[in-house]
Amino acid sequence: MSLAGIHNQQSAPISASDLVFDGDLTIEDTKTVLDCAARIRNSPDDYRQSLSGRVLVLLFEKPSLRTRVTFEVAMQSLGGASLFMDLRGEQIGQREPIADVARNLDRWVHAIAARVFRHSTVEQLATWARIPVINALSDRVHPCQALADMLTVQGVFGKLDQVRLAYIGDGNNVAHSLLITGAKLGMHISVATPEGYEPDAEIVRIAASFAAQSGGSVTVSNDPRAAAQGAHVLYTDVWTSMGAEHEAASRRQLFAPYQVNEELFSLARPDAVFLHCLPAHRGEEVTEAVIESPRSVVFDQAENRLHAQKALLWLLLAR
Ligand code: CP
Ligand code: NVA
Image 1 (cartoon, protein in one colour):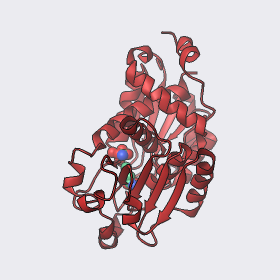
Image 2: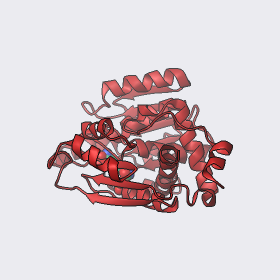
Image 3: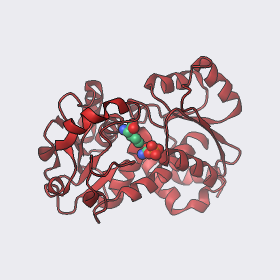
Image 4: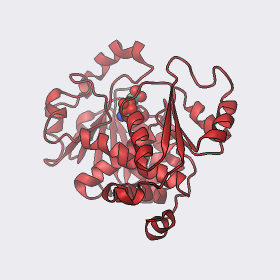
């Protein structure tokens, strides 16, 4: 099918031109990405050459398995190409200003995906580049992960509206994106963290304002059992994110009561599922028994990174 044909038949374009922060996608945009992801997954042949001649550059200051591979495979499956720049040990903006990096890249490629330490780095890339910029994880948010997470939950329960998700652990980038993206889609998101590791107050405020529009809700506490009670989804992430390794030992002690184990899982609904963005540290934030149980959907979730990002790339680039 021609690109115009696909557009006419299937998709309203999204209003966003970048995905730096989850809030860049409106509620409608977010639903469009999820719908488009399902269509691309079901009819990959319709999209096989849809990004022909388009190039995505990946600028990664941190390690990655899932994000790198899914972006590169997504571009290849849509007929485009990708170029990976391993910037571990060399932060963007160190050799030359970020504004110059952005204004060089937009002369050669069609989109940038950046995994960065400082969120401001990806913001600056988006300010200066005239091409779409996608946040492939920053210290503040991980928006591509949340899109795949929504696709996964929708796949299990057939809906997102009024689904209860409990996030147990560190109030980090992954928690921030889940709060905002889940709240946009009418989910009830309950986050339980140790004291001092709560999600950022501004993120909670943004999520609450989306929840007020969607009929969802946002709760933050230090009580993992209360959060898990009656949940459809239990979600956790590593206790120590990339860049905070020096805090790992102290965090292991503080976070121990927040482990997702069979006892905590038993408080959730009988049909509850377990999600984790991966990589997982078995014996820390989750036990082997939970992550390897039939209720764990972590590898479907990883697969959905590919479908969600194909949709995002297609919506941002195939215009
Ligand atoms: N979940 C996730 O972003 O994985 P990677 O760090 O391997 O990309
Ligand atoms: N919170 C984790 C997510 C890894 C995908 C980190 O930032 O390291």
